[in-house]
Image (cartoon, rainbow, N blue to C red):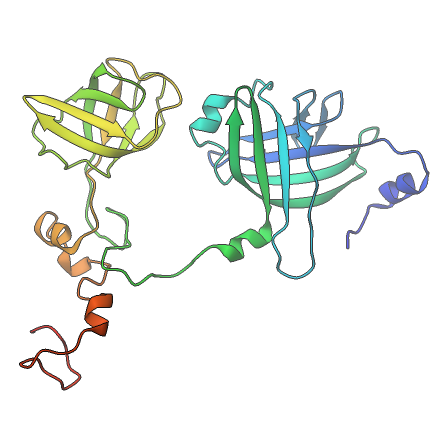
Length: 293
Protein backbone atom coordinates (compact mmCIF):
# COMPACT_ATOMS: atom_id res chain seq x y z
CA UNK A 1 0.00 0.00 0.00
CA UNK A 2 1.29 3.45 -0.94
CA UNK A 3 1.22 6.36 1.49
CA UNK A 4 0.31 9.45 -0.51
CA UNK A 5 1.30 13.01 0.43
CA UNK A 6 -1.76 14.95 1.62
CA UNK A 7 -1.66 17.32 -1.37
CA UNK A 8 -1.56 14.43 -3.86
CA UNK A 9 -4.38 12.63 -2.06
CA UNK A 10 -6.55 15.74 -2.33
CA UNK A 11 -5.61 16.13 -6.00
CA UNK A 12 -6.63 12.55 -6.80
CA UNK A 13 -9.91 13.07 -4.97
CA UNK A 14 -10.72 16.21 -6.94
CA UNK A 15 -11.92 14.27 -9.96
CA UNK A 16 -9.74 16.17 -12.46
CA UNK A 17 -6.06 15.21 -12.34
CA UNK A 18 -2.89 16.44 -14.01
CA UNK A 19 -0.62 13.43 -13.67
CA UNK A 20 2.39 12.17 -15.60
CA UNK A 21 5.12 9.54 -15.30
CA UNK A 22 8.74 10.33 -14.50
CA UNK A 23 11.62 7.88 -14.82
CA UNK A 24 14.99 8.30 -13.13
CA UNK A 25 17.98 6.19 -14.26
CA UNK A 26 21.16 5.84 -12.19
CA UNK A 27 23.93 4.43 -14.38
CA UNK A 28 26.87 2.51 -12.97
CA UNK A 29 29.26 5.30 -13.96
CA UNK A 30 27.43 7.76 -11.69
CA UNK A 31 25.43 9.52 -14.39
CA UNK A 32 21.82 10.31 -13.38
CA UNK A 33 19.21 10.82 -16.12
CA UNK A 34 15.56 11.82 -15.91
CA UNK A 35 12.76 11.42 -18.45
CA UNK A 36 9.04 12.17 -18.43
CA UNK A 37 6.07 11.49 -20.71
CA UNK A 38 4.80 15.02 -20.06
CA UNK A 39 5.10 17.63 -22.82
CA UNK A 40 7.45 19.91 -20.86
CA UNK A 41 10.48 19.29 -18.70
CA UNK A 42 10.07 18.84 -14.93
CA UNK A 43 12.55 18.99 -12.08
CA UNK A 44 12.63 17.69 -8.51
CA UNK A 45 15.19 16.24 -6.08
CA UNK A 46 17.94 17.90 -8.09
CA UNK A 47 17.18 15.93 -11.27
CA UNK A 48 15.83 17.42 -14.50
CA UNK A 49 13.29 15.16 -16.23
CA UNK A 50 13.51 15.64 -19.98
CA UNK A 51 10.28 15.85 -21.97
CA UNK A 52 9.41 14.66 -25.48
CA UNK A 53 11.82 11.74 -25.39
CA UNK A 54 9.51 9.20 -27.00
CA UNK A 55 9.12 7.11 -23.85
CA UNK A 56 6.06 4.92 -23.38
CA UNK A 57 5.43 2.55 -20.48
CA UNK A 58 3.80 -0.83 -20.84
CA UNK A 59 1.60 -2.63 -18.33
CA UNK A 60 2.94 -2.68 -14.78
CA UNK A 61 2.68 -6.11 -13.15
CA UNK A 62 2.78 -6.38 -9.35
CA UNK A 63 1.99 -9.24 -7.01
CA UNK A 64 1.98 -10.05 -3.33
CA UNK A 65 4.81 -12.03 -1.78
CA UNK A 66 8.22 -12.40 -3.42
CA UNK A 67 7.06 -12.64 -7.03
CA UNK A 68 9.16 -10.49 -9.36
CA UNK A 69 7.46 -7.32 -10.55
CA UNK A 70 8.28 -6.07 -14.02
CA UNK A 71 7.49 -3.29 -16.45
CA UNK A 72 8.43 -2.79 -20.08
CA UNK A 73 9.55 0.66 -21.19
CA UNK A 74 9.76 1.41 -24.89
CA UNK A 75 10.63 4.45 -26.93
CA UNK A 76 12.73 6.09 -29.59
CA UNK A 77 16.37 7.01 -29.25
CA UNK A 78 15.47 10.66 -29.62
CA UNK A 79 17.02 12.05 -26.44
CA UNK A 80 20.45 13.65 -26.69
CA UNK A 81 21.41 11.84 -23.48
CA UNK A 82 20.11 8.42 -24.55
CA UNK A 83 21.71 6.97 -27.65
CA UNK A 84 22.43 3.62 -29.25
CA UNK A 85 26.18 3.82 -28.71
CA UNK A 86 25.79 4.15 -24.94
CA UNK A 87 23.32 1.25 -24.86
CA UNK A 88 25.67 -0.93 -26.91
CA UNK A 89 28.62 0.02 -24.71
CA UNK A 90 26.83 -1.38 -21.65
CA UNK A 91 26.55 1.94 -19.81
CA UNK A 92 22.94 1.10 -18.91
CA UNK A 93 23.57 -2.49 -17.81
CA UNK A 94 21.94 -3.09 -14.42
CA UNK A 95 21.27 0.64 -14.01
CA UNK A 96 19.01 1.57 -11.11
CA UNK A 97 15.63 3.13 -11.85
CA UNK A 98 12.83 4.91 -10.04
CA UNK A 99 9.33 5.32 -11.43
CA UNK A 100 7.34 8.27 -10.08
CA UNK A 101 3.71 9.35 -10.47
CA UNK A 102 3.80 13.14 -10.43
CA UNK A 103 1.35 16.02 -10.51
CA UNK A 104 3.00 18.13 -13.20
CA UNK A 105 1.32 21.31 -11.91
CA UNK A 106 2.95 20.82 -8.49
CA UNK A 107 5.86 18.35 -8.52
CA UNK A 108 5.92 18.26 -4.71
CA UNK A 109 2.82 16.11 -5.08
CA UNK A 110 4.41 12.85 -6.18
CA UNK A 111 4.70 9.23 -5.11
CA UNK A 112 7.35 6.59 -5.86
CA UNK A 113 5.57 3.74 -7.62
CA UNK A 114 8.41 1.34 -8.31
CA UNK A 115 12.19 0.99 -8.09
CA UNK A 116 14.64 -1.65 -9.19
CA UNK A 117 17.17 -2.24 -11.95
CA UNK A 118 17.24 -2.10 -15.72
CA UNK A 119 17.11 -5.59 -17.25
CA UNK A 120 17.28 -6.74 -20.85
CA UNK A 121 17.44 -4.00 -23.46
CA UNK A 122 16.62 -4.76 -27.08
CA UNK A 123 17.21 -2.37 -29.98
CA UNK A 124 15.83 -2.20 -33.49
CA UNK A 125 16.77 0.73 -35.68
CA UNK A 126 16.20 3.92 -33.73
CA UNK A 127 13.84 2.32 -31.21
CA UNK A 128 14.48 0.39 -28.03
CA UNK A 129 12.61 -1.61 -25.40
CA UNK A 130 13.88 -2.02 -21.84
CA UNK A 131 12.75 -4.38 -19.10
CA UNK A 132 12.49 -2.76 -15.68
CA UNK A 133 12.94 -5.34 -12.93
CA UNK A 134 11.66 -4.96 -9.39
CA UNK A 135 13.76 -5.31 -6.24
CA UNK A 136 12.69 -8.95 -5.83
CA UNK A 137 14.70 -9.79 -8.98
CA UNK A 138 17.82 -9.99 -6.80
CA UNK A 139 16.32 -13.06 -5.10
CA UNK A 140 16.46 -14.91 -8.45
CA UNK A 141 20.22 -14.49 -8.75
CA UNK A 142 22.49 -17.36 -7.80
CA UNK A 143 24.83 -16.57 -4.93
CA UNK A 144 27.63 -18.49 -3.28
CA UNK A 145 30.09 -20.92 -4.78
CA UNK A 146 29.39 -23.60 -7.36
CA UNK A 147 31.16 -26.97 -7.37
CA UNK A 148 33.03 -27.15 -10.67
CA UNK A 149 36.29 -28.47 -12.00
CA UNK A 150 37.12 -24.94 -13.17
CA UNK A 151 38.10 -21.97 -11.03
CA UNK A 152 35.28 -19.56 -10.11
CA UNK A 153 37.54 -16.61 -9.29
CA UNK A 154 38.39 -13.80 -11.69
CA UNK A 155 42.04 -13.58 -12.63
CA UNK A 156 43.68 -10.94 -10.47
CA UNK A 157 40.89 -10.51 -7.91
CA UNK A 158 41.29 -10.92 -4.15
CA UNK A 159 40.41 -14.62 -4.18
CA UNK A 160 42.81 -15.34 -7.03
CA UNK A 161 45.77 -13.42 -5.67
CA UNK A 162 47.66 -13.05 -8.95
CA UNK A 163 49.06 -9.55 -9.50
CA UNK A 164 48.23 -8.33 -13.00
CA UNK A 165 50.28 -5.69 -14.78
CA UNK A 166 48.45 -4.18 -17.78
CA UNK A 167 50.44 -4.06 -21.02
CA UNK A 168 50.08 -1.14 -23.39
CA UNK A 169 49.54 -1.57 -27.11
CA UNK A 170 48.33 0.22 -30.22
CA UNK A 171 45.89 -0.78 -32.96
CA UNK A 172 47.90 -1.36 -36.13
CA UNK A 173 45.13 -2.20 -38.64
CA UNK A 174 41.40 -2.81 -38.44
CA UNK A 175 39.24 -5.54 -39.96
CA UNK A 176 36.02 -4.45 -38.21
CA UNK A 177 34.80 -3.31 -34.77
CA UNK A 178 35.68 -6.73 -33.29
CA UNK A 179 38.92 -7.76 -35.03
CA UNK A 180 42.13 -5.81 -35.46
CA UNK A 181 45.90 -6.29 -35.48
CA UNK A 182 48.00 -4.64 -32.81
CA UNK A 183 51.56 -3.68 -31.97
CA UNK A 184 53.20 -3.89 -28.57
CA UNK A 185 52.28 -7.52 -27.80
CA UNK A 186 54.88 -9.25 -29.95
CA UNK A 187 56.63 -10.79 -26.95
CA UNK A 188 53.54 -12.72 -25.78
CA UNK A 189 52.67 -16.24 -26.82
CA UNK A 190 49.51 -16.84 -28.83
CA UNK A 191 46.54 -17.25 -26.48
CA UNK A 192 48.07 -15.40 -23.53
CA UNK A 193 45.42 -12.67 -23.76
CA UNK A 194 42.47 -14.88 -24.67
CA UNK A 195 39.86 -14.18 -22.01
CA UNK A 196 41.69 -11.04 -20.91
CA UNK A 197 40.37 -7.51 -20.57
CA UNK A 198 41.14 -4.81 -23.13
CA UNK A 199 40.62 -1.16 -22.14
CA UNK A 200 40.85 1.54 -24.79
CA UNK A 201 42.95 4.52 -23.70
CA UNK A 202 42.53 6.48 -26.93
CA UNK A 203 40.26 6.88 -29.91
CA UNK A 204 36.47 6.97 -30.11
CA UNK A 205 36.15 4.10 -27.59
CA UNK A 206 38.37 5.68 -24.92
CA UNK A 207 37.42 4.48 -21.44
CA UNK A 208 35.44 1.47 -22.71
CA UNK A 209 36.50 -2.11 -22.07
CA UNK A 210 35.80 -5.47 -23.68
CA UNK A 211 36.72 -9.12 -23.17
CA UNK A 212 39.12 -10.72 -25.63
CA UNK A 213 37.69 -13.77 -27.41
CA UNK A 214 40.82 -14.81 -29.29
CA UNK A 215 44.49 -13.76 -29.29
CA UNK A 216 46.51 -15.12 -32.19
CA UNK A 217 50.08 -14.50 -33.29
CA UNK A 218 52.04 -15.65 -36.30
CA UNK A 219 54.47 -14.27 -38.85
CA UNK A 220 55.07 -11.24 -36.68
CA UNK A 221 51.38 -10.25 -36.78
CA UNK A 222 49.33 -10.16 -33.56
CA UNK A 223 45.54 -10.22 -33.94
CA UNK A 224 42.90 -9.65 -31.28
CA UNK A 225 39.23 -10.58 -31.60
CA UNK A 226 36.68 -9.30 -29.08
CA UNK A 227 33.57 -11.14 -27.93
CA UNK A 228 31.41 -8.14 -28.78
CA UNK A 229 31.86 -5.40 -31.35
CA UNK A 230 32.70 -1.99 -29.94
CA UNK A 231 29.86 0.51 -30.16
CA UNK A 232 31.95 2.95 -32.21
CA UNK A 233 34.55 2.28 -34.87
CA UNK A 234 38.02 1.17 -33.83
CA UNK A 235 40.68 3.26 -35.53
CA UNK A 236 44.30 2.71 -36.49
CA UNK A 237 46.51 4.21 -33.81
CA UNK A 238 43.99 3.78 -30.97
CA UNK A 239 45.84 3.03 -27.74
CA UNK A 240 44.80 0.39 -25.23
CA UNK A 241 45.92 -1.58 -22.20
CA UNK A 242 45.34 -5.31 -21.90
CA UNK A 243 45.64 -7.89 -19.12
CA UNK A 244 46.21 -11.64 -19.57
CA UNK A 245 43.37 -14.12 -19.62
CA UNK A 246 42.92 -17.48 -17.93
CA UNK A 247 40.99 -20.56 -19.03
CA UNK A 248 40.20 -21.35 -15.36
CA UNK A 249 41.84 -24.79 -15.44
CA UNK A 250 44.06 -26.08 -12.63
CA UNK A 251 46.91 -26.80 -15.05
CA UNK A 252 46.98 -23.19 -16.26
CA UNK A 253 46.76 -21.84 -12.73
CA UNK A 254 49.61 -24.03 -11.54
CA UNK A 255 51.94 -24.02 -14.53
CA UNK A 256 51.43 -20.59 -16.08
CA UNK A 257 50.73 -18.43 -13.05
CA UNK A 258 52.34 -20.55 -10.28
CA UNK A 259 49.16 -20.05 -8.26
CA UNK A 260 47.89 -23.58 -7.72
CA UNK A 261 47.62 -23.03 -3.96
CA UNK A 262 44.92 -20.40 -4.57
CA UNK A 263 42.98 -22.38 -7.19
CA UNK A 264 39.27 -21.88 -6.50
CA UNK A 265 37.90 -24.89 -8.35
CA UNK A 266 37.64 -28.62 -7.62
CA UNK A 267 39.93 -30.31 -10.15
CA UNK A 268 39.66 -33.74 -8.56
CA UNK A 269 35.88 -33.78 -8.30
CA UNK A 270 34.67 -37.03 -9.95
CA UNK A 271 32.39 -36.71 -12.96
CA UNK A 272 29.27 -38.73 -13.74
CA UNK A 273 31.29 -41.60 -15.24
CA UNK A 274 33.30 -41.97 -12.04
CA UNK A 275 30.21 -41.85 -9.85
CA UNK A 276 28.45 -44.74 -11.62
CA UNK A 277 31.56 -46.81 -12.45
CA UNK A 278 32.29 -50.01 -10.55
CA UNK A 279 35.68 -50.14 -8.76
CA UNK A 280 38.53 -51.95 -10.45
CA UNK A 281 39.84 -55.14 -8.89
CA UNK A 282 42.98 -53.46 -7.53
CA UNK A 283 41.24 -50.25 -6.42
CA UNK A 284 40.87 -49.37 -2.77
CA UNK A 285 37.42 -49.82 -1.27
CA UNK A 286 38.04 -48.27 2.15
CA UNK A 287 36.13 -45.03 1.58
CA UNK A 288 39.33 -42.99 1.38
CA UNK A 289 40.60 -40.66 -1.30
CA UNK A 290 40.49 -41.86 -4.89
CA UNK A 291 43.79 -40.09 -5.53
CA UNK A 292 47.25 -40.73 -4.16
CA UNK A 293 48.54 -38.20 -1.67
